[in-house]
Length: 139
Image 1 (cartoon, rainbow, N blue to C red):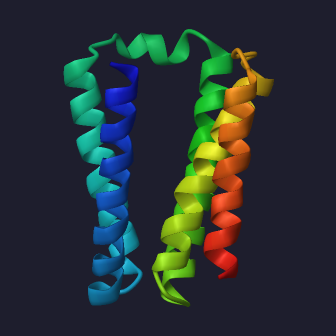
Image 2 (spheres, rainbow, N blue to C red):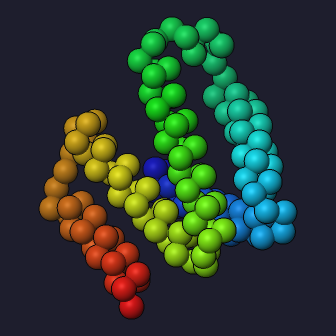
C-alpha cells in the first residue's frame, strides 16, 4: 500500500507541476498565490475529513509545531524558487530537478535523522537517481 500511495503522490505532484506552469503562463505570478490558496484549503479540509483530530492536538507537543514551521518554511522556499525558475526559463528543467532533489533530500534525511534502515540497494538507487539527473541536465 505504501508504494501505491507513493506512486499516486508522485503522479499528483507531476500533474500539479504541469498545471502550475499553465497557470503562471496565463495569469503570471498571481498563479502562485491562487494555486497555493486552493491547495491549502483542499488539503486542510481533506486531511480533517480523512484523519479527524482534536485541534488541541496541534499544540500538545512543541517539537511538532517546530517541525511544522520548518516544513512550511522549506515548502515556501521551494514553491517560490520553482515558480521563479519556471518564469525565467523552460519548465522542463525545474520540473525534473525539483522532484528528484526533493525525493533525494527527503530520503537522505530519513536515513540520517530518522535512522531508517539503509542497505546497498537504497544507496545504489539514490546514486542512480542523481546520475540520471546529471545525465539529463548535461546532454
